[in-house]
Image 1: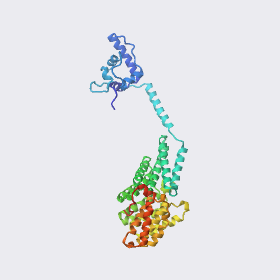
Image 2: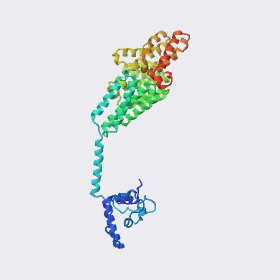
Image 3: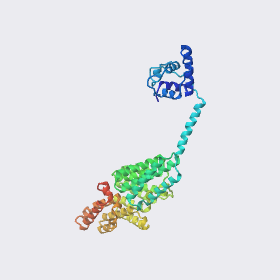
Amino acid sequence: MSEPTLLKKLVRERGWTYDQFRRAYEMAARDLAATSGEAISTASVEEQTFRRWTSGRVSGLPNRPAPQVLEHMFGCQARLLLRPPSGEHVAVGSRFVPALDESDLAMTARDAAAHAGDAASLSLPDMTLDQLDDDVIALARTYGSTSPVEVYRRAKELLGLSQALLERTQVPRQRTRAYLAAGQASALLSSICFDLGSLPTAVQLSRTAALYGQVIEHGPLQAYAHGALAFLAYWGGRPAEAVRLVQTAQRFGGLGDSAIIRLAVIEGRAYGHLGRQVEAERAVRRALEQNAGTRDELHDDVGGEFGFPADRVAMSNATTYLLLRDADGADEAASSALRLLSAKPADQRPLMTSTQASVDLARARLLRQDLDGAHEALEPVFDVPSEWRGTGALERLAAARAELSRRGFQGSNAASTLGERIEDFIASATAQKLSGAAPLAIEG
């Protein structure tokens, strides 16, 4: 790095402190007085003046006798000494051995102590982070039974709080906890933004979660975020990219059974979008057979939205079978999901999951030309409040509406009536209003 003045460069080459420079300056003044006869033998320099000279904050030349003393010391014009180094002088200093005295060592120790004191003052009460952890866990576990708008509000607050706490601590252990909370809050925000119909925002927030996980080298968080990106990729019409992303997610360390099952389900759906039946069915079987007895702190210990229970596995697999046009497999998986959900207490049934399973059951029946059965499966769906009509359900309903337009249902008043009910349901959904775009066909 270039020095601000030639004087600073020459002082540094000599290894001089201010005290050493002052003594050399006074010696040069006495020597100059002896040779020139000028009465400058008592000339000295204050530390503030020394700092100004070396920092380049001097305009013009200092008062006499300073220019003469400096020129006597260094054999160089004073105007050049007080400017940045250039080719106008011959560098000196190789014959000087840097010197240190006790004042330099003491100053170094004082600077280090001050820095350490500043760092030590930037810490948090552990209870503050304990509360943050509890709040993130509570939101993850109540995600399925909390209004989407409320989930968004709370997750946004938790992300902001996590970021604020990161500014208040330099303790590595505490920063790791705050980064993890920020990553979890970002992941929850991504999920709810998807449910509310904003795919680009969901993608950006999942990338944010992945980056937080990378900062602290947290395998489960990185795997969850990459799995979410894979999920969002096939919803965005990029199933090949989804396969690549889920394979990346599977390589992170420290994953428990729930994480592995979730990624296998996402992989199966991606292959279903690609029409690769063998790979899709293999992934479905792997999700159903995974049982190594391993856990991780995110998918299993926090759980909730980060978990992947059997009802969610069955619901997701039903969609994969539909992509493969396997009506029997889809019917069996969707029915299994609804049975598992009905066995839970009413206040613990995630409404979005049950809605999606019901729509997939209807779609499986439509594949078999069972219009009455499809109508029966959709009846509970039509009672879902507007704010709970997430993107997943709307996309599935759009696919069911498309199925009603196929040849087997043309001319059917019942099919026409059911199609109109689906259109009205979609049009009044909160997610539909937020996105401002019609749902995609889930078959991609």
